[in-house]
Length: 326
Ligand SMILES: [Zn+2]
Image 1 (cartoon, rainbow, N blue to C red):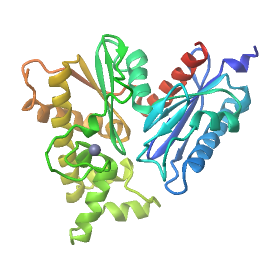
Image 2 (image 1 turned 180 degrees about the horizontal axis):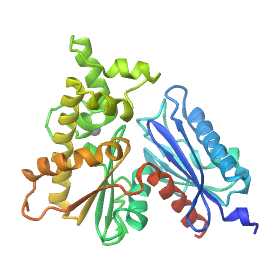
Image 3 (image 1 turned 180 degrees about the vertical axis):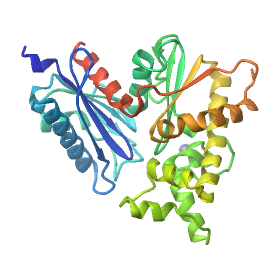
Image 4 (image 1 turned 90 degrees about the horizontal axis):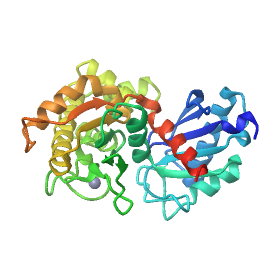
């Protein structure tokens, strides 16, 4: 076994971006890359972009993709880890049916590829090497394009029958706002970046004013990224502030409901919006949660994800490492 074969790659496939890392045997980041997730085309275009991002991270690490021991992926949607397939990935373009992501990546890159749920691998990374380290039971809440959740209970991942942790689809208002999942009143319908953008576009169409879309154009983006929301909030844009407040109230209700059910020790807030706004908005989420907590004199600890933007990709690499070690 050559030295390069100790290197592993991790891909965090999000609705907005593809973040990759190449780690050495000691877990040190040797290369990384970040690309926007294709918004048009279909699964083959997304998988080609993933392979391209890995190739770029490998170049930074001074190796070829074929030198990698393994590739791990954290993917949205319903993941079959054994088959390496992904279905129902609503935030990816034209993702119909069941897509053999693992086999296709191996075809393009060479090394074996293991697929896990994006939020679950990010939660496990926070649990083993991030903000969740001191605890036995945590809830990871990933506030980004959608709102995902991951669970570690008594030191073990809780996957349910495969789809546990969908905190974004906790119903916080019966008959409420339309969610990207097609149902109504989900937390994500108020808090997810995609849903927030749809709401902002509706308000503009109804004649309300905002700088959100001007800032988007100035920065040559085709969607309201977390960075655009950040700039608008810092400029005191009324619509951006109101929609953020609406998102925070929904997050607080959903997270408090999950805490009431599970009584976990800590909640870790990650994701594109969570990492960017965590320090500013976590205290607001906590105070908003208070009124919904059954045991309000003893709330769980709350932290922003310590691995930041790289957490998902690091977790994916760890999943790959576990995959080849059997
Ligand atoms: Zn939903």
